[in-house]
Image 1: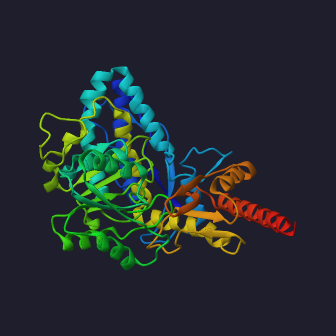
Image 2: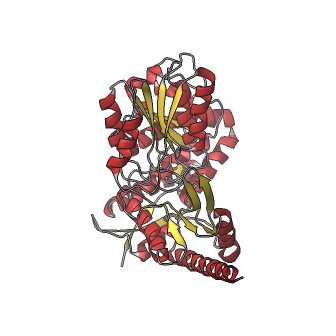
Image 3: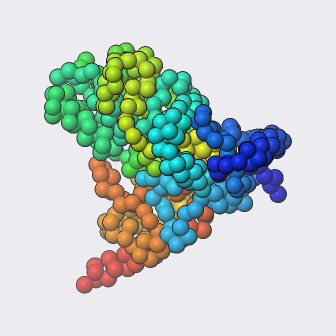
Length: 465
């Protein structure tokens, strides 16, 4: 049996002094209750100047003993699944693109949005805009770095292209990257190549690779005296392959200490257990609407503090060479409610815990892949080992295109996936999330088995003609 602890999320502006006093008493009682149960990782983060709030609903999460492994305890994850409002009629196994937000985040976003509409320029520019500093601190704590190294933006593409276009490079300078990097990243580098004459040196990865030294060696072979930048995708979005970012970074710095390292953490951040400085890069970008489950259109940029002054912002501030990380946040009007709701997503994430989350996501991936390995015609380009993969896996059925398989999955079982055809990669990407029940993965396995069986039968009949 489980005890429970509270997630305190839902915000309602209070109107009367009496309600405000009641909220103060309620907050005191809730804090005592949370302490008794072991506590949450941070209470609600409210921006300065906001009216008092009271919680409308309470979401219960089972408490566990310190160090308890709940990876395969379905009763625990059943409560986590109830935190989401996902459709019961579609099995969403394409969380790699954008993940849904738990209801605590959705409701916080709605409250901030309604508050902003009461007096937009007052609440947005004077209250929520100031509240970005508390969100910055929470992100920095999660990332393991200084708040002065974190900028809040809209997605990983914006973060990484800020770096790509902001770096001081000259004609002939070389950038090492892979053909399996994200298209927006590759296209940004190609634009600089076309306009300014930098040189792109591509590595081609044949996935899966279960040898970190082999991966590092491929990068090292591409380094020359002209190498100025190394681009690393920490987790390849197409297949879930984890690259040894820290080892590659060290190899680059050993080759030439002046080499700058850019890391794409779009899929690894809030899915894998690490701190950004552990990767030993100079720059890092992530989307927060993926594995952190923040509102859509929220992202994060990390720049090592000593490098900030040298990067030119995409949108110009008064002093583009300022050493202040905030120069990268001159976006004009954007969704202040979405930014503020990031703090609630972090609270939810911390309640579960980094390590527990990573183990569960890897377990879900292995759960369905292992059941499919003996299906005739089934193959995967994703490792089953936790040091080389997380939640993402890509598979193929011999004789069928990725598009045909994805279409059949949805038509037969209402399973939503992503068909992928990219460099050295051809298959259907499956990305479960914490809210995915095992029954949904069982349906996936059964449907794959049926599709493969019918395809094999059709192939045999055609061979007899």
